[in-house]
Picture 1 (cartoon, rainbow, N blue to C red):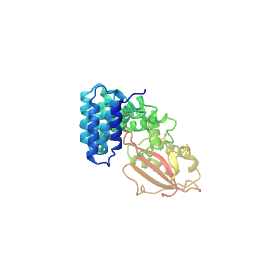
Picture 2: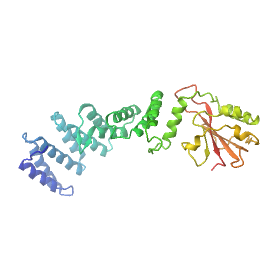
Picture 3: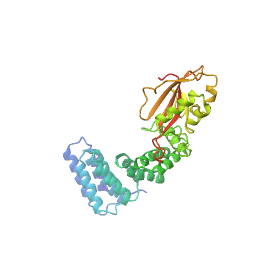
Picture 4: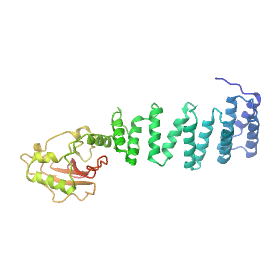
Length: 344
């Protein structure tokens, strides 16, 4: 809606507009004083008042005079609790504290805006949305980030990438040990159409991580072993006896992969099912006496050979199960896949 700026307002706003941050400080202070005098006029229309306050605040901001800017804006909000733009003035205060690396104080003002002030669009963007985006970056607790992520998804679904929100929610729930919510968030992530293709900063294997966790949760988990030694012994015994059925029982029944070292577990052809019987019949299968030297407390590799004239060497990949949802399963071991060929 159009509004009328009184002649004095036009004059003073023009004076300050000409007073850039490189102008003499005395001239800037003089122009600002004229704005203060204009602001004292109780008959000044709301939109004109907004323009004046904004000019004063930004003049301080341009000079990096954050303390005076904060004092001016917080004083205004305290004395004018019904001002339509109070949320915006406090947003400027929060931004000023961010500029000074005072994140805890900025966090206080962002939260205050969300709790006590109605949302406001400034330059077509929601102030509440801006607050939530900042809070996710600066808050120190997973519980707070969970609340902010959920609010973003529920209130601003068209302004955020829900696929990324769900995977980040899963990570925060994991930090809190809320494993049912972890699984729920991973499942919601997998339901998104771009789950298998999205690239998320800091989470390079989002899709495979979510798929493994959700599929594992639905499985019988009857192929797991109490220890790496128990798994290694069972696999070697089955190979010695050429017992393909026993060897197949040792393999993971979900997310088992068979691929080259350069491939990725999420590749479509990496998860094809096959029976070990097809490769044991008529072949002389051998294995190294010890696990590969690159093995560690969470992953292990057993070098074998003789499976195929095309790719003679296979590394059987064993890993410790990360599944805190069930303490009886968490920490056990599984035969999770096969790598074809010599290690890179």
